[in-house]
Length: 432
Image (cartoon, rainbow, N blue to C red; front, side, top):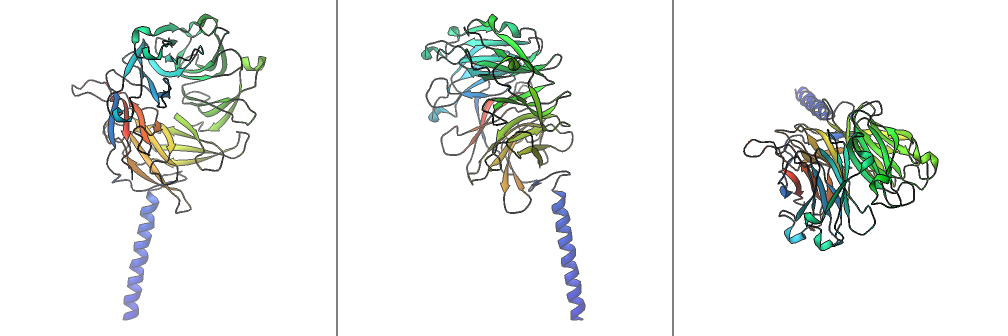
């Protein structure tokens, strides 16, 4: 009798353990190389602060210290508002308030804006890329007197003539390509006749008509452009995420070095994700092995995920793909960044989404090293407010020792039901 009862008890335990293992298996997305845990309670949203919410369609943030005060300043293009604006960091005591701002130019259909001292006069200018019917790259010349940086009347806007009407410009990367004259401008586009290339700087950087467009690759829809020495030969190559067309995926273009070959097409090397719609990417030594990897958000049709491409050698041509599945009740993948959010010494993943009405739009994943399979615990950042978030920057905005999250949101509706967006915003890390 006792033996029979013991057998029944052991059988129940085995069944319970089997059900537990089965339930755990359900948390692993098909094709995933890692595991997402804790899909339901994910913590409270972080406190949101607005740098600016005065216009419509804030579309990306780019950073630089333009006034040499040791603090990051911001430039953003407002796509629906048709303007480009600069924001000066107000200092830690006022960082939760609206930032001092200046509109540097009118830029219809602006998709990207970036800081660069184009003419080397120590005044940091701005370059805006415009898509849609505008199809133009604009240069916004900053005033030489830093005390006048916030005076809109002191800024001068010019068209970069070789860009006008050529294609729908999506992204700009200031980069010294050929080692001569001033800094060059690498740019990428989308749609018909889309290309990646660079505007070759002339001896006089203010002579905009003298810039020359040097196409180096066809493109479909460029999301990211980054400069990195991918093959260890001492010069900077161009890494891109291209979401559409025959060359879609993550890839890099090999800089042939100064000379006539640099003026023509550059050799293309795929990293991966050729069958995916990739969005924004980041380059980071994610696995702390001394080699920089590539992570990219994917706009999935069903499974939302981050793809981690682990570098396998120094040539930049051998990569291993690992899938980080994203949790339920989020939008579609848009941006990705890597940083130690909880200060535990491990790299965490922060991601943003679009199409997130009524769902989470910004979250972070904490990595656990306590199992053979990497495991991820999702944590809330934005909550359900906002519908279309953009690129992410991780930085300590309030100087309290942890990383906060800076981004844009361009499609949330205002109290009157009109589409305006949350604007240029940052989420305050509550700490551990």
